[in-house]
Image (cartoon, rainbow, N blue to C red; front, side, top):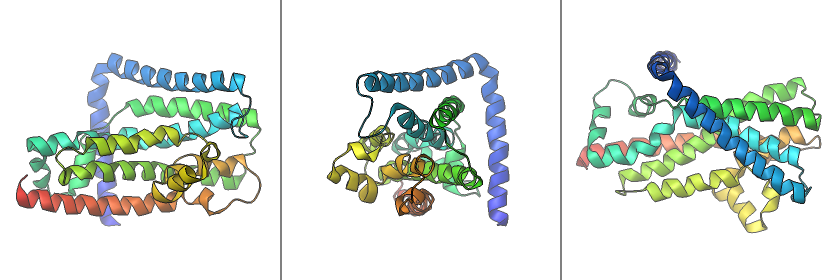
Length: 265
């Protein structure tokens, strides 16, 4: 617990320093966040155009789709803000600059991830939260104490799940010189996970549930708030999957850093 507290305090200090530095370029900060908001509003507008011609999509109406979509945007905030540096891992490994992460008396994964913070995640969260509130009101969702408690837990689980899957894919660079295609392949499914699993056939639904569990990023946890009937284990499994895959990601990172450090390649 003392170590966890130390890393939390250290990250808070590093985050505050990064924000202070970033806000020296306020125009760039606002433009990047406005662009992020506009991009996702365009995605919601595309859904509206689709649903204007087809009132139901596999039994789901527009407000329900926006609810799932907005849940995914809020869950993606942690990935955008805290894990964006994983996209640069192949560059650091191929150029040799990754060696610097071995020379600090702190966890190398923590050091690597804390070095970059992407504040566009703020715009992502604002857009997602606004759409989430709008769709909740339109759907008449009753926010019981149980649902209010479940929301941050499920969001955290979903965030950790998608971040861990992408980190695992990025770690392929320790063994393959350029594993960007693997990372891009996994990331491409993030968009598909914003839609109900009911639109996919049985094979794809099984893949997104048991093999590449993208269904647990948005659809399954969102059902907790959209359906009043008894829900199966899938609705509550996001935190478990998130913790499990983060554990796997950390172990793969540790193995990769040992191999890379030992070979110098």
